[in-house]
Image (cartoon, rainbow, N blue to C red):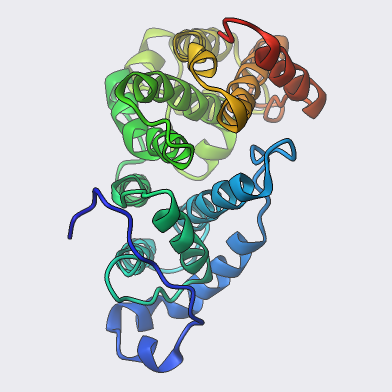
Length: 305
């Protein structure tokens, strides 16, 4: 199958008779239909009301897929690897004459077709969630960045693809922004991730700052954990600063959408600093007002960096 081209897709309703002949689907159907319904109801916060409806529709379709995959990898009961395999198989039905089983996938089909999106970024998002099932920790920062090439950067490729703006220069800037956004999310959710058996803080950094697993699950954020978080946030900030000029290379709706991503990430970084890197008291979050203000500032800035 050629993953460099968009598939024709199909929006036909799910066919129970067709699904019953697919053993992989039969094993996963009940659970996947449940999380499919949940993902279908999600609202994509970056699909700003400032964007025309056609662009929001495409971004929502991509977000719905990402939400489905994340829920399968993070929350679904049973064999999550089997669920992810079934999603991957259903994704391949977007090309050729296949009819996807999942509603999220059927809504994605027109976006793949209209925007000429390849399937590789979608497959990489599935692979990231497979990795979550087998690699709950990361030894080095380089290992974590490699994970982000699967879990985060494909989203930026798809967003640029929707707007027909996916050239090599923009993709490089987008990768920096998306990796920063992924790191910010991990640093906001240190306690939640640790409670679920996952530690995204590189083990080498934890040793350097004298942190142990117990520091991630305590009632109060220890001084050594605060120092570690300040260090990791500075790394994410450097990536965000590196990628932020992406906004200035874009115009129109693409500029609005990407400015929202960058402003949201920057506001989250600022919130972590304002909380003095206290990540155990609750995830430090930025207000919608701060994100909106930051988005507007980037839209009117000449450099947009």
